[in-house]
Length: 383
Ligand code: HCA
Ligand code: CU
Image (cartoon, rainbow, N blue to C red; front, side):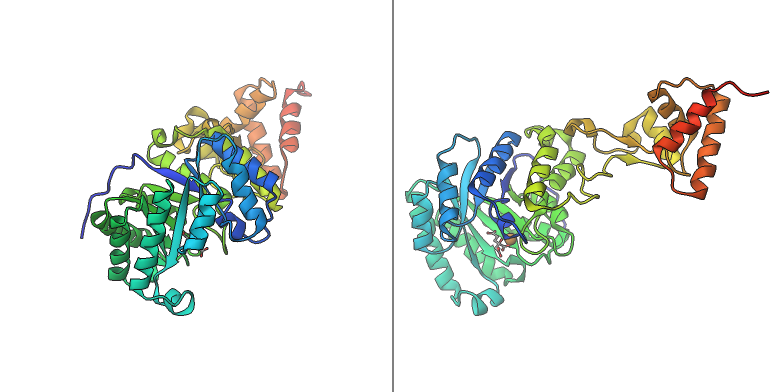
């Protein structure tokens, strides 16, 4: 079926850095770390934060209680299995809502909880009703949705919608979905339920951002993200990359967020994890605004949008025009000379450009090499 995509308007980020992100290799967030990350993300403007289940450990419960008592704008969620004990403890910890999940695929039903579809619906509805009675916002998601029987998951979602759930969640638990499948599943779900729809996508085959974007185009209202995409295995949709995707689609979509905080948020989390921000991360990777080839730098110097879909200034960042290589052009050399306070005539710039290229053909060069060549051009010529 060929459907028109729904204009993306009202969407929410559910930041799961303190839940899915706790499942990332080597994550060990203290309560203070959790407070600091939550405070940065609150200032950024994420609408929700999801924390690990209070059942996981005493610290997990204490962290939820601590954030529940902290002034904040985001809604505080925890992620729980579909059972009453977990739901009671979540409410007791003071959350605004609970993200309830249960597996519906044959794998999950056979090897995980061992429940029939009828039992899944029964326990799901009981948990949702209880949480609603306690004034909590509720979400019910089917883990491993894409390997579940389509009719089964639609039956479960419909039953949860009728039980009064606020949103149903689609989870690509093992990262096998592609944008078209995501789009189709969510479009079909949009016709089956009246409640909101959440998407949670893993990145095993590099589609997490594209899938999240297509989920929004198909009518999803909530997207699970983590800072730098951390999570089980290689993680889920990275918040920064999804911001980039939405920005390039329509910049006003993300103006509700404090974009200039993104670099600090990612640096903070990376430091706590003892990892580098990957060089090719959209927006914050060290080469995200690096321009090199002469044709590119020439145009970018005249008008950056020629080769930039995202303006670095909007994120408090700046572009780099690389002049220390054999692909350099005269305009980039002129711009660099001006930035060094050197006023050189065109023929000198041409000569300097040629010298930079020759030197770069012989060995890798640095900006200091370029500076030396330009400074020599300023000296009076011997005759
Ligand atoms: C997991 C569970 C989950 C849950 C997603 C959700 C997944 O850690 O395996 O609640 O929507 O990916 O299925 O993260
Ligand atoms: Cu997950």
